[in-house]
Amino acid sequence: MKAPKDQHFLVDKNAVERIAGLVRVEGRVVLEIGPGTGVLTRALLSRGAYVRAIELDNGLFSYLQEEFAGETASGKLMLVRGDATKCEFPAFDIVISNLPYSASSKITFRLLAQGFETAVLMFQSEFAERMLAPVGTPECGRLSVMVQTYACVERCFELSPKSFSPPPQVRSMVVKIHPRGPIFPIHDRQLYADVVRALFSHRRKTSRNCLKGSSGMLDRTMVDHLLSVIPGEILSSRPEELYLEDFATITNMGAEFRDRGNSSACR
Ligand code: SAM
Image 1 (cartoon, rainbow, N blue to C red):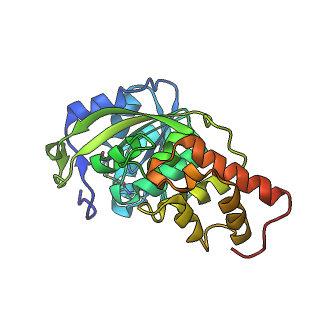
Image 2: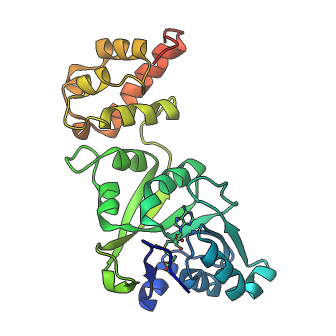
């Protein structure tokens, strides 16, 4: 089977079993994004999961169809040919995947928006570390804030390049994600996402200057209002120094102002 460029397949059988065993999947519907040659798919099926797998590569998709003809015929496996950054996800309870690294961010945000019980995901270690970085520390970023607002992330284990074929140049990390409601109430989730994006688009600047430079992302009248009501200690902090509560406060003040009919039509 010819591997698509830039994709690294898990060949470490121990690692495959560890990943498949991190959550009880018997009788559950598991979404797998990027099954590749089906090494993890097989481990999940043998544990009694119903697997829904989305594969982008045509060659791999045809290979999987042949290799798993029995399991697809019995309904234990559903193969979807598609791009997981865009296509509709089939219904599922749990997601377990060795994600394509180039699309990790987009797919993770899509999964969080859709909702799930638990996710076991493998990422490039550097990406996973950013997701795990505590909010309010220099390592945190938009990804850490957005993921930790809606979920708890648990570090499971790291894998060396030797576990893959061909070996990548980076280490990989498996994490478990447990969604939960936001700790601080958020009145408008889309506005929250826009506020976090606007603030982290200039992470070395103060929040005041990030908001001033947020045209195209946030309504200008709302920003002028926010600059006059947000507490000074938030405005003079950099986004990486803010806490989840601060992002919620900024959003809720903005939503309240807009809902009073004060926003302008332009951004
Ligand atoms: N799960 C397999 C394993 O562990 O060996 C393969 C993992 S490989 C890192 C990523 C897989 O995702 C490849 O099979 C690749 O073709 C597929 N892929 C890449 N981009 C994708 C996308 N946007 N949607 C769905 N699958 C994608």
